[in-house]
Image (cartoon, rainbow, N blue to C red; front, side):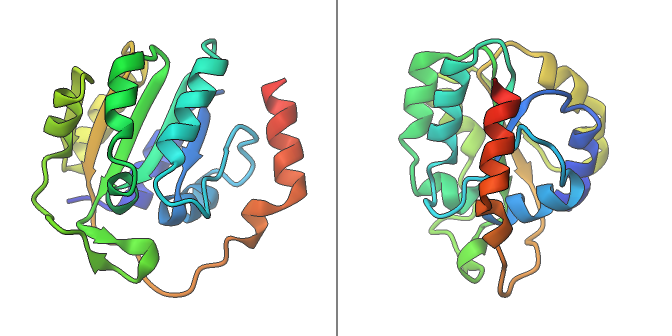
Length: 186
């Protein structure tokens, strides 16, 4: 198991001008690591929709790498997205899932099956490049190559549950963030 925030610090060194789509707790941790990344599209308020929004961005901007920072509970809310991604086969798409066995944004309630093999499910859905990483050192060794792979790429990150409690997402909705994101895409 690894800490998601530490994995994000490693990822931040490699992200460059990629579009990043983080959800809930991942969004909080990504914002702490990369507060000024103009190409971050925060997917808050529609649990499970980050991968679908990211797929739209990947199709619309095939010249940019699109990185989803999803949660296992969030992915379960829209599990069919794996089949759609597997069918579309976007070459610029990489989907990281923080797998901690809980609906973290909703108080840490357990997901129905903590032992689910998300990488196997992704492969079954047509995403051939599906990996599971459970150690931070392994993530650090592999991240550069993973980000260069032709997508779609799926990575099940075995992470510890982050802090629970009240979260403030209000600044992620700020008009200035939307303006900044649109300008960065232009």
